[in-house]
Amino acid sequence: MAVREALIGLLGAVVGAGGSWYWSSQQYRETVRKNNFDIQQVRREKNAAEQKAAEAVRDRDKWTSQIKDVAGKFTDQMDRLIIDLQRALDLSRRAPNDGDPQLISAARAVTAARDDFAVILQNITENTNKEFSGVANALTSGRPDIEELRRASGALIGAWPAKKEKLKGSISIFLTRLGF
Image (tube, rainbow, N blue to C red; front, top):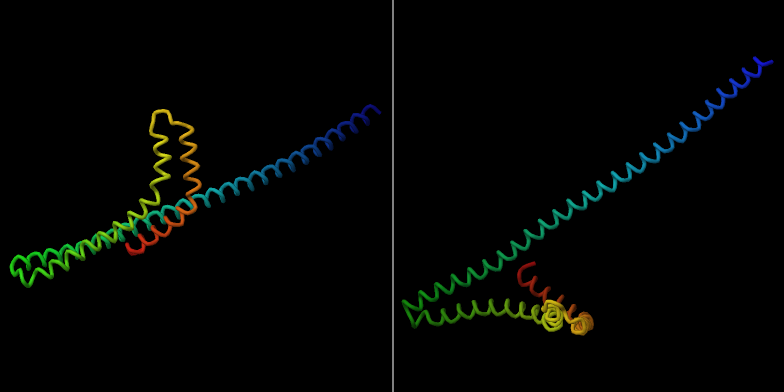
């Protein structure tokens, strides 16, 4: 009987150990599966972030290229006007009666292009001056005057909706004139 009880106890221990092993292996498999899923999710998120970063670099390079192209177009236009002005000046010096009207016309074209550009920049500047300057002035001292900063910030916040629309219009005109 003692042998029988020992065998039953041993069998129970083996079955219990086997069941325990099976249960723990299932838990291990579930943990591995879950962790692999988490790792896959992290890899997908990392790849998506890297893709967005690469797109941002491409967009930045595209905008940088376009801005350089537009700036080049404006300066090329001014170059043509300056060359025309030089030709008219040379003609005016050689033949004053014939060249003076062309010199006047070329000079007007150069100044009109400059003035057109300056007016657009002036509009942009005007829409970022008064209230923005108030905030900047409140910050200029070593220790800003909080009451002045609050007043200036409130004025900027109150004026911003109207300024934003005017600024959008001015920037739109500016970019259009530059060829965007």
